[in-house]
Length: 339
Image (cartoon, rainbow, N blue to C red; front, side, top):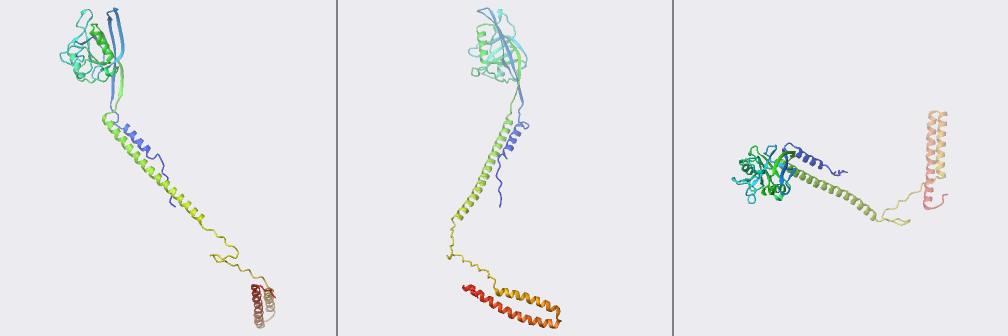
């Protein structure tokens, strides 16, 4: 009988997981490490209503990708037409820089809004106006978030981005003619790893391959399990059918005196010992003993003659005994008493 091995689970899954791990850890799966620096922004101004100095500091800015990571400071200047063109994209944009006591020629920092043109264009416009740094505030839809800025080719000018609420707060003060002094400092270094596009494609292919292998293995496993279950069910069904057929076979009890399809086998009783048989046995024993005794005393010639005579006599006696036995057997068969 051929035995079929039952399929076991968990054969193809470890291989698929190993394939995915290999795809993630393979050379080139990781992209380059991206680092960026936060900026510490502090502002200082005199409140005209209370004549008190208001000072605030927070690590709320982010340095641009191409900006030197160093500090800068100066009075904040905004585009003169900030209500109509807050982005400062026009090449002839002029900036309003309020100065305390009307002093001029102090270092200043350009504050412009994001949008309207590229980061590089904004920085170059402010750099041509001799700004010591450029501060961009994010769009209103981004809330308090800042984003990376790419502005290669802008030289050594410091560029940072602040959130929209922070930028609008400073813009409102400058538009009111209040001189705001800003100091920019280097904040925390952040390292962020990201996966390149080529690595994403490689991982995606590996994942799809893993899914195909897993699906094919599952189909094979359930087919084998179905075949195994079917064979087991079939053998059990055959056994049940055999038992059912055997149970349905007719059972016939043959009674005494009833002739059935199978012929009755009659056992013949063993013949009882008769006096004749005993007599023949005794006679043969007596003759053998007499032959031995006479053979030892008589010569060879007389011994042979006497043996012939005894043999003839024995045959006659044996014939009589055989006749007696046959008569006794016939009497037994016919139910007559043996005389």
